[in-house]
Image (cartoon, rainbow, N blue to C red; front, side):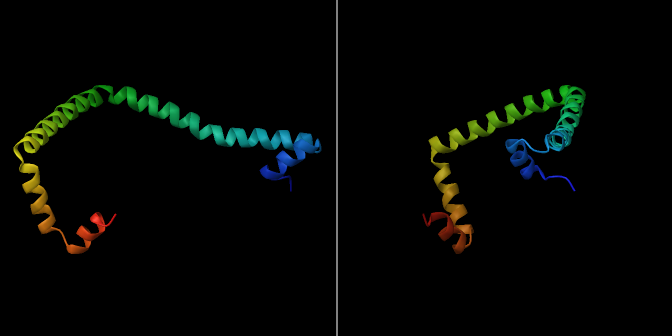
Length: 103
């Protein structure tokens, strides 16, 4: 049985079994790199295929987030956020209120 990867760096530092160390490092590099290359290629193809729908979803998400921010701003300015907070605290179990206000 050949050296392990941890032992390979020790053997390489000592200058012994260099052929085995080179082969082990090469195999390790191929084994570590191959999934990354496959993932990159696959994700590029999927992204190209879904580009239009992702752009539409991004636009819709931006509009939705803008609407939520606008509603939050109105709630804060009108004081409705405090009423909402009080209702949520009343409805939540005591252990949750204690957990979230402990620190």
